[in-house]
Length: 290
Image 1 (cartoon, one colour):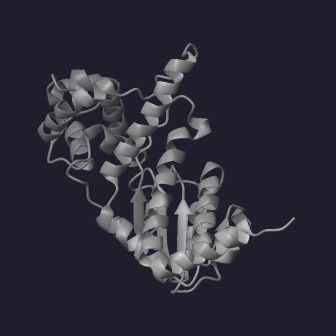
Image 2 (tube, helix red, strand yellow; image 1 turned 180 degrees about the vertical axis):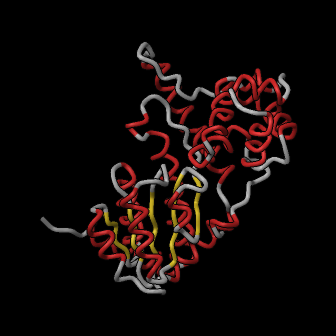
Image 3 (cartoon, rainbow, N blue to C red; image 1 turned 45 degrees about the horizontal axis):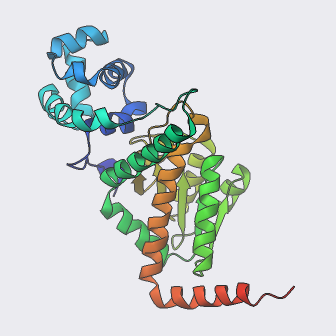
């Protein structure tokens, strides 16, 4: 899926659209978005004029915002938001507090992760995933770029693909990522992982890879972020981080789910090679002598 042609999935909820579009919105549109996120139940009872007044913007901005996230106008957005309210009431985003006991903490973390995975399944473009799997299967080499928490996910994908004999390497050092990306060719694949889609070093490495003609794939949470303008194939997650954002809890879970899909799809596409490689690597570990 070309980043210039990304379309919304019919079952993608209004709140999810707002979250994934937020960084690319104009400042005035962000005011509308934030008001809807803060008071979704109130919005479904209000007119476009009242939403504009409470957001501190013009009526036209509310309408343009609605269109920016994929609706024909404010009324269609409001109808979809109203349909989503029952499920919104059950969500627990951001509810992990300082006073949560272990029992509640356990339920809250599991609920957060389940919701993240459900939302990611709703937003993920299956055609894009198919293209990514085909690219990894056919590629001569696979480079994976990521820093920080995304670098840990990059390493995990590297380990999985190496076990099935796919030639790949994860680069978490920005200088190595960019320099090695310059050595790719059109038969290679570059995968960049960035929750924000704005991680400068990761975007630059993928851009270098794109200039070599390699197939470029990104895993990110936000439509129209800088990394989506570099990638040919966009795999979108739906992780709404809570107050513990710096721990990258939900984003990591969503990213791991995507790379597992890539791994399983590639393993299936190369089934005979996969079975042979796994047998050999398992035997090597089982027969290791100390």
